[in-house]
Image (cartoon, rainbow, N blue to C red; front, side, top):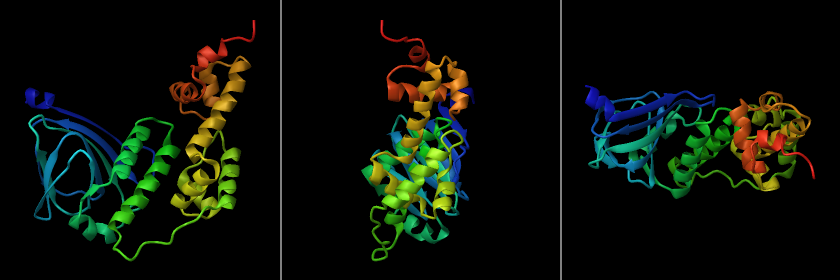
Length: 271
């Protein structure tokens, strides 16, 4: 049993992002799933190796460049398709992201060859692994959901093309400016400005050339710079500017400024 456990590595958590029931990362070398069902949608990418599985009595596989979407309530199994097993990342999504009306289309074509979708799912996993980046995760998940709907929606029923909306973008910018410290979730922002979340993200990004979460983090880092130069400690600055903790501040501060908050604080003026 110990040897078997050593050949299985798993990590699971529930993030603070609406619609995500669970995040599950696993590395299996020999383990095979028996037939089972989930009550949530399974969005799966495989980083190493490959998985073979049966869904609705049809065999499928997960090459490295695909995204697999397994619908709820439909039995499936899974086993390694390569000698060294597989390493996968999974999101379990509730019906608020994908409705039961899409189950049939997902059963017919669960493996999606879409490099853009594959990249976005990977970026979403990176955001979900970092507490404090929930707005980024929610924005990325919204665009992923929109792309999944495009894959699953019957041909001839595509929605209307949405154009740029500078007025909507400005309203969201004003909302973010008002809530730099406390922040705002994408669903709440969409409700406040009365827009679909995906359209809201696209309108903002198109108008300003930056995603809403990037704009918010930039504003927070600007505030942090002023407080650090005033002599405040990085831990206090993190709490005062809306970051999850000091590590969260450090990650974004270094990305935008090039140095850590501590080094910035002690750098001094011209000599």
